[in-house]
Every structure is written in C-alpha cells, then in structure tokens.
Image 1 (cartoon, rainbow, N blue to C red):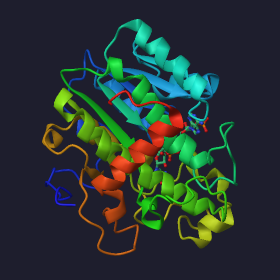
Image 2: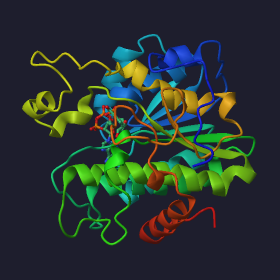
Image 3: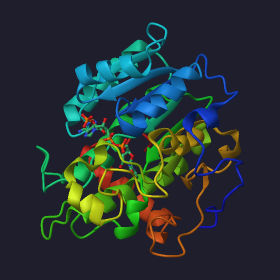
Image 4: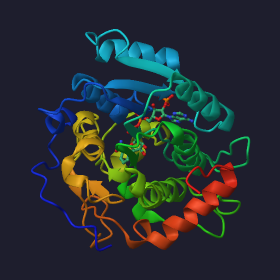
Length: 323
Ligand SMILES: NC(=O)c1ccc[n+]([C@@H]2O[C@H](COP(=O)([O-])OP(=O)(O)OC[C@H]3O[C@@H](n4cnc5c(N)ncnc54)[C@H](OP(=O)(O)O)[C@@H]3O)[C@@H](O)[C@H]2O)c1
C-alpha cells in the first residue's frame, strides 16, 4: 500500500477525458478499448481518437458499435476508429481477435480493459466460469496474454477499469466461481478486486520490458452497466431520483472515462506502475467503507494476492505469456 499516495495531478473528479488529453498528441499510437462503443468506453474511444490515436474498439455487438461510433465520431478520419468482434466470455473469440491483431504486425501502445458486466443473474460461461469473473477478469487476462507479442517494447500501458465495487469482496479463494451462495453484488465485487490485482501483478511482470499497468475506479456514472438493476432499486440506492436525474456526486460518462485515459497517458505515472487510481490521480488507502469516498482496500493492493490471482488465472485460461 506504500505506493497508494495521490500525486496532485492537477485534475480532479470533474475532469473529462478531453481535459486530461488537452495538448497530448497521440498521432501514430495504437489503442485498444474493450467495450469501446458504450458508456465510459465510448467516451475513452472518442477522446483517444480526437487526440490522434488509431483506436480499435473490440465489442461483442459490432453492428451496434458501428452505429454508436458513427454518431459519436461523425468526423473521424477513415480507419482512425475500427470495430472488431470480441466476446470476452468466449476463449476462442479472444484467440481469434488477438491472432487477427498480431497478423497486422502492429504494436499496441495502449489497452483500456474496460468491458464489463454488473449485477447479472447467476450465469456461467461454457467453461463453467462465473460470468463476472469470466468477462471482467479472465477474458482480459487471456486477451493481454494473447497480445503479449504486440506490446510495444518502448512502452505500452494497460489500464484495467476496476471499481470501488471492490470494497465488497476480496477474491473468494475457496470458491471463485460461486458454486455455492451466489450473490450478484459479491460476484461483481470479486471481479473488480481481480481487475486491480491483475494490473498490480501485470506491472510487476512487465515493468522491466517497458510495460506498465494501472487500475482505475471511474466514479459513479449512469450507463447501460446498470441494466440488471431495476429502476426502483436504483432510486432506493440513491443513484437517481424518481425522474432519472443522477444523484449528486455522480459523474457524466466523459468524466467517468477521464481516469482511465489519464492512467493510459500521463507522464506523472511513469514510475508508479501497478497503482489503483481514481479522480485522475493515484488513490489513497480506503479509510472508510463508503465507496463514494473511495480509496483502495488492502485486498485489492496486495502483491501476494496479485501473484496468486495471476497463477489461478493462468491455470484456468492456460495462458501465461510472461512466464
Ligand atoms: N458506470 C459506473 O458507474 C461504473 C463504476 C465503476 C466501474 N465501472 C466499470 O466501467 C466499465 C465500463 O462500464 P460502463 O459503465 O461504461 O458500462 P457499459 O456502457 O455497459 O459498457 C460495458 C461494455 O462492456 C461490454 N461487454 C459486456 N460483456 C461483454 C463481453 N462478454 N464481451 C465483450 N464486451 C462485453 C458491453 O457490451 P454490450 O454493449 O454488448 O453489452 C459494453 O460495451 C466496466 O468495467 C464497469 O465495471 C463503471
């Protein structure tokens, strides 16, 4: 936890993805955003493309993504933003996407591991894995390991979009796939702790080769992520009022994308790999159980747990390109 200390980045909760990229030229850089055509991912895609990056958007519904991106980026130069099929619940689809990218011979400079699901009814993938753990974590573990040959030796960054939802659960080492006692919030929480631990260990493995990894909490933002949470429950939780207005303290999607984009590009983080960020800065240790206050819980910043999760994920997916 020593490294979890804010730097004073000059940005805060109100900053947008465009704000953190003001004056940053990403021309010639290639970025990949999973789930990059909806919610926070769409805003990250838009900001990275505006800053000149070539952006690959990897999604499970390519036709819908094309439509969303045409509306969001009507003036994007041809080929600046491309849509690719990727279902993170399907190991074969991850292999096919990665093989397609590797065949281009291009280096991958930035990867925002953003796609995710929340509070789903109990669901298992074909491999028998619990859906949140499979999509939010194991799918991204497999993707990054498959893409290892394309990570740029002169410096790639990987940002795992975690959440303050990690407050609710450590990794359930005894039962990560919820063979007993399924709870949709604990399943989401475990997967978000896994996102933070994934970035922590990936950074340890990659730092000597110029690969740095970070995790972020984007804030609270009303997006399609809440699709499995009934409206009455969202009102009762205080996320919105009866007419759908977001609660005080909620961010816009453009503000929600800012921390991931900042972590992917800020020179301030060059010597701080592996950290968990929020509000465009390194988060401090969590001092309360209030997710809105934020910070990082000890179980999401523990290097031994991070190494243990890496081993578990490598065993489950059969992929460890950093061994
Ligand atoms: N919104 C918040 O308040 C909040 C707070 C903390 C953390 N986060 C995190 O932020 C990230 C983005 O969430 P968001 O709020 O922007 O929600 P969102 O709009 O629902 O975006 C999530 C994206 O993930 C994609 N996805 C879901 N399952 C997938 C799969 N099997 N394979 C590939 N892509 C898949 C979705 O695709 P479809 O469009 O096809 O469903 C969608 O594009 C998530 O990791 C979430 O946990 C969000």
